[in-house]
Length: 353
Image (cartoon, rainbow, N blue to C red; front, side, top):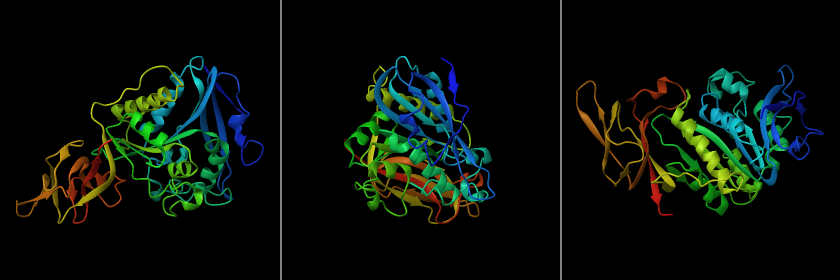
């Protein structure tokens, strides 16, 4: 079935608030263009939104990506799911926002290195329609689709040497179930301190999209897919499999979720920092289980040829094992030579269940 592109842009705020309740009611695939008004002197920002209306009624499932310009695996995963989902089989509505901020993706850079119109929306939820560009983006999307969704997943990405992971709050049992069902090697329940049941209780420095959704009592999660800067086919496949798994669990499409043989569940984590400079040589791989004081790798001193062992501070599973620089967002920061204080590993405290 071909895509029905809605050429008339949806403008907010105004009559198009919660347009999912009024637009494209017949089964089919649709692409809407939501236009975000920007401050004076900055052109409005168009954001494409994919919608698949199912033949039968069911939940509204929203998946987003593309907040940060170098995190592109989720963008591709959402677009491919949109194009493969059959409206005649689907129960409910699938909504995909491949890029929350398309301008960030087009720039190929992390928002902190970009112009003032491309501000970071990551901690700008639920936003302000008269605020910064980032706040206008989030306020527009909240009114257009997010408040109408029953389940929300926001896909990001991190280092090449990190495992894909789903983050949610243990306070929401449905979110926990869906995070595990998403089917990544790691599931982390570290959102508990930020999502206590109401928007007013959100930590002021952690007002992410997933926190906003969870604070309103709905299942939400943040997914970090392995690697950024480039499309890594296994990560795109993991994202697509996860989206399908959630749709199967919600009864939107037929089938049984495909999950890994080993899945690590964690409550929190410990960062391992370099005690001095040197080339970090890892001896463990992501996903490996480790014991406290077990050697994770070593720092090679390029002046003396000596080495300094780096040990695990706790029992757990290796989520990241590589040198990550101060910002972790540029190619130079991915270099293996560590300065004192750089993160060289991250160990998740693994729990049962």
